[in-house]
Amino acid sequence: MLSFDHIAISASDLAEGSAWLEQALGLPMAGGGEHALMGTHNRLMGMGDLYLEVIAPNPAAPRPAWPRWFDLDNFSGPTRLTNWVAGSKNLMADLALCPKGIGAPLQLQRGDYRWQMAVPPDGKLPFDGTFPALIEWQGSLHPTQALPDVGLRLTQLELAHPQASALRAALAPLFHDPRVVIIEGPAKAMRASFTTPHGVRVLE
Image 1: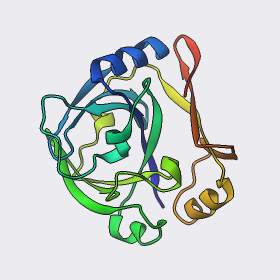
Image 2 (image 1 turned 90 degrees about the vertical axis):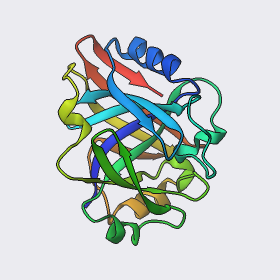
Image 3 (image 1 turned 30 degrees about the horizontal axis):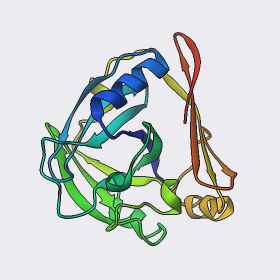
Image 4 (image 1 turned 90 degrees about the horizontal axis):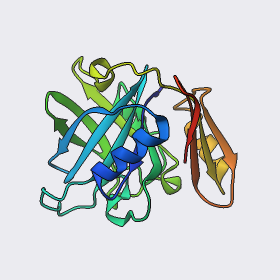
């Protein structure tokens, strides 16, 4: 079975996106770096067994010749919650059970971190991005180990989609976490609720 790994928040500008998240949650970000293969960079915030990632195109890096992950090439508007990522212990086996369009695994790295991740050829994950990206970390290092505990915990990730039943069926053989709730909606929408030292906070 897959495990819940992290939540991705897309931004047009990393500094602006990070400031937005810090303001929304009242907590500081830490860590992060560059993804040379994808022409992106990120900042992180720990939440126990998971972490939040603000990710944006890196203006200092050349644009890759292939679509960036999380459909960032087509992202515009305000910083917002756009994707989530599930961890795999056997990426090739799990990918065989995923919907068409999940992508092929790429070998990636950021600093000392090494991982494989399935990136769709057009950058667009199934079910308009409500299906998770799949990641398999290599070695014992994981970002949660290096992030300070700021008292942030996810209580619920709500995924709304017109094809909610099909999304549930696609995830059923792969993933179960009571924090992830799938509901019917007129369009893709994501909403995450958290407990913080300042009370309950919600991101959309």
